[in-house]
Amino acid sequence: MAPLVPIFSAESLPDHVNTVRRNFQEKRRKGEPVNLTECPLLEMTQFSCNPPQNGVPDPGVVVCDPVVRLFRRCAGGLMVETTSWEPLKLAEEAKQNQTLKQ
Image 1 (spheres, one colour):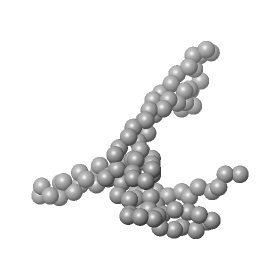
Image 2 (spheres, helix red, strand yellow):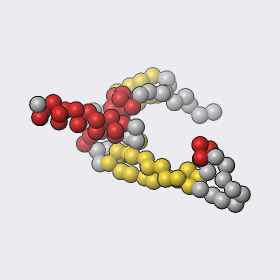
Image 3 (cartoon, rainbow, N blue to C red):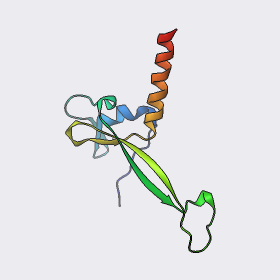
Image 4 (cartoon, rainbow, N blue to C red):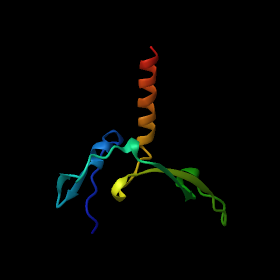
């Protein structure tokens, strides 16, 4: 059986990147804290074929929709999916820019 996977919000992703879970205990990751904004951004496109929200297609017809996933590759081989976090980061940066302009 696969281990339990913790569920957390996208806002707390930077905090969870700096912790490691072993034997149901959280420990701080070794080395310097990871700053996701400094890690290179990578993109991967997957395809979801015949998604259920589009209804049942005609027999023999396969309909595929692209699904873009975003990742950050950090030092030490750490790779984190940031698809949900990236829009939050952009909104926060836009808010900071608006505050600076005023």
